[in-house]
Image (tube, rainbow, N blue to C red):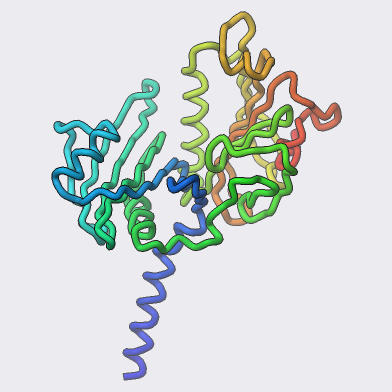
Length: 295
């Protein structure tokens, strides 16, 4: 009997730890009732509506999220609550697609929660399902939430002081005026991290209002780990761009990095304008030099 009891404890522990691996990669931010999440290169939002999960209520939800009557609505049996999911795919570049998946879920208190996943690249249904269940069960640990006010950030397990001049432009996307900008995500696999930065590079190349004037593979230290990164210069000279107009800059230097850091698979894109405050020794602005050293 004791052996059987230990066996069940072992099985429960394994299944619990497998489900909780998402929390090692998850960041969350509560923004006035709408919660943002970042995991595996996904941008995720969750919002609860005081709307019944019935025909009348769902019509309102679908209208708000521009879900058409003709869009396929599928019940996902891996979600522990009454639900419908809708998946849409749009072409970004010739070989790059964005997938939007909406999980419309009845909550235990009979409201309706919409969890919207956006992924530029290959979606992972298992991760989506685990996160949806954790959100509806209200099981996201407090330590996964970040503050709206940025004094420091947890970057792949290291606390990094940023001061009081930086701010979120989106979850896991930090801007520090005249000191650089960066976005990052923690991934289940290094291959997924590499795909994420490659997709971001392809989006940069496809943008109108500027052009890539140089692209090279460079050696650098990322959080002390020697690695290679794509370095791209994106030029706005002679072109009209709201982004360039706001910054006053003429070109962006961008680093696309994917590497295993402290046993975490990290994708990271860092950039700075030509008129940012650049350290003459490191050739980097203050934000970037906290994370990378260029050889």
